[in-house]
Image: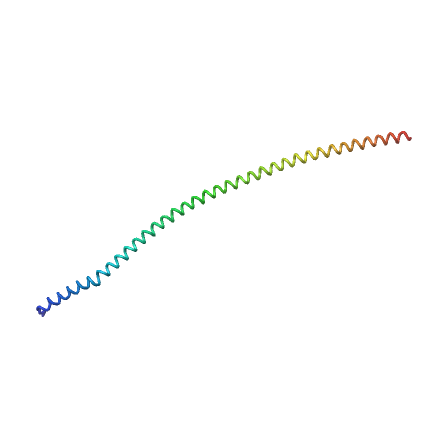
Length: 132
């Protein structure tokens, strides 16, 4: 069957030596490189998480400022509309007062013209009646 002789111990010793050499020359450096890369990945992942959090905070702050600006703009818009309506009302009232004043002045002028025309007519009638 199997013949166990001293060559098996030599083979085991050679395998063990090869494992030690491979461990020092190949496996350990490869493991170190892999560990370094995992460390870099973890560090970059933390940086990304921090940056994401900062972006979310800044976005929230910007959204809050934007909402306040919209409210302020709406208030300013309403104020401008109210002021415009007040100015319009004042203009309308002033125009009505002025037009009433102009109408009253024109009526006085017309009354004076009518009075002058009546006096002239009376004088002409008196003159005409004296001639007759």
